[in-house]
Structure formats: C-alpha cells, structure tokens
Figure (cartoon, one colour):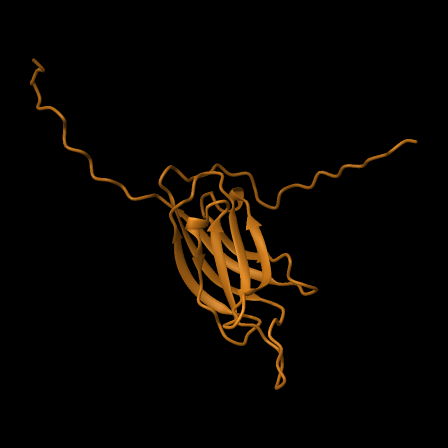
Length: 168
C-alpha cells in the first residue's frame, strides 16, 4: 500500500518584522470589545444573553493575568480597558479568553485565541480583531490593541570611584 501526502505551505498573515521588545519591556494592552459571542445564560423573558469578561495573560505565566470587568446581558461587549503586562519576554505568546460571568457557578468559556509575538512585537504593535476559537457554532471576534513599551529606565548609578583615586 502506498500513502500519498500533500503539503500546502500557507504564508503567515503577519509580515516579517524585527521584534522591538527588550529586557524589561511592558505590553500596553487595550481590550476594546468583542462581537458575536454566544448566549450562555438562558432567559424565560426576552433573548438569552451572556455576561462576558475577558482574561489576557502571557502564555505560561499565570501571574501576568489581567481581567476586564463583566458586562451584563450582552453578546457584543465594549470594555475599552487598558492594562499593562509586565512579565513579557521576547518570543512569548499572548492568550486571550472570553468568559460568561456567573455568580452562582464557575464561568463558561465563550471563546479563546492565542496571538503569536510576530503579530504585536514590532513597530506599530497590533490593532485589530482576533477570531475566537471554542465558541460553539457562532463566529465571534475579540478586538484588541497592543503596544510594546520600554521598561522603566533606572537613573544612572553614581560612580564607584573618584577620578584620579587609586586602590591601595
């Protein structure tokens, strides 16, 4: 028996660009909003909705996690929240997940996406929408802006010796 395999190489949607992050860089993250989310809460009166909130973090670094407030009864939330991620190292991916807030139980996943660094670690950063996965039979999107900002610059240290001094 013979097996025939075909391979199709798909170009990246992100153009090749030199990373601009450096040690100590901070990511300024604006979580703008989402659209097309599925309804996770059942309603006897009116249309079913969700109470969405978004979580973002540097992949593999749970201490970097930031979270928006939840917006009640909507499938198209607008957060416009700005957060800073301080635990970013060049080459780290960013993970985003959108959840339905429930007071009495664990939150329900409404969608998630991982963004590779070549999409945002470049001059101009990233400003656009990301297609969410794991969101049921609906097509849903998350809108974010990401900017790489230099870390805190420390003032120059005082000299350790005085000019023309000698160690004896």
